Image 1 (cartoon, rainbow, N blue to C red):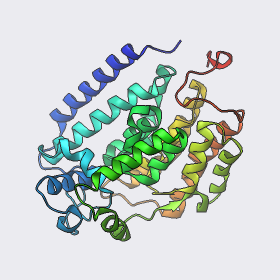
Image 2 (image 1 turned 45 degrees about the vertical axis):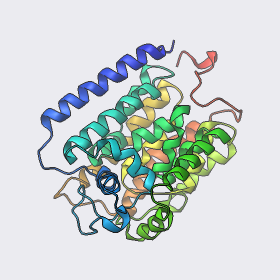
Image 3 (image 1 turned 90 degrees about the vertical axis):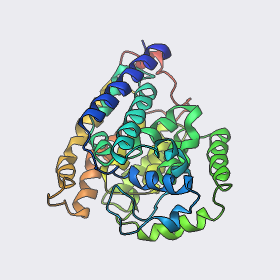
Image 4 (image 1 turned 120 degrees about the horizontal axis):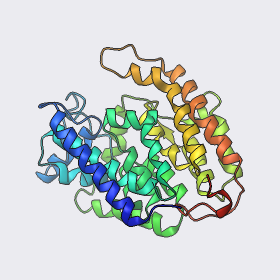
Length: 320
């Protein structure tokens, strides 16, 4: 039996509060905000009345700015964190994201929390990235507008929860930010050329075409999520792969995908400062073996039937 919304909310709030407390106690003063640093610094410039695409220093160290590589909605979402020091903002952003994610992912059962033990979840924390919120945007109808902060992964969220209301919410949020800076779409597109990490569709990765299995299960949210993820440009950084945790629908599938994800351990170790990074070609092959293959198997086993995203499993599989 799935936990109630009230119990899930209490657990999620407790988890977020605990993580925030621990993070604030252990955070190093003067450290940056990881990948969130782009949106964080952009929010500060935006609140000061400046154009963040023009004002941000391209030579700033990672976590403290650099060229603004995100659409303006990311800066708008980051605005509430702007008054705090970067390290505090990063901790608060992660704690909030994990809390919301915990609430969203446990709709079918507490086993959803196993996703937090996956390699992409660890990398999302290490890099202070958006994965937790974007998965939540797919699972919670009221958060679909968040898909606008990172459009490549946002398309996966919209593919999972495809309906016109969700698409309109995302487009509407993006359109509203034009009021603050009408030129941002062109500025953002020009800044994408400065992206330090190549973004290539999984389809072009070794054996990545296995993700096209989602096309055969396009009526299911999981099939659409896998298909969309296969087609949009994604980074080799494992935090992007957090979106694949939309696909497991039973505790067995969740355990299998989470365990398989740890084939990426050498990749994670390669992102530790001072370590030798794993070559991109090897990262792509490992990622397909560790994640795309098990996700393709999970999706293939499903019936190609329409389903409500985030709905509870059918009685026949409720024992899972």
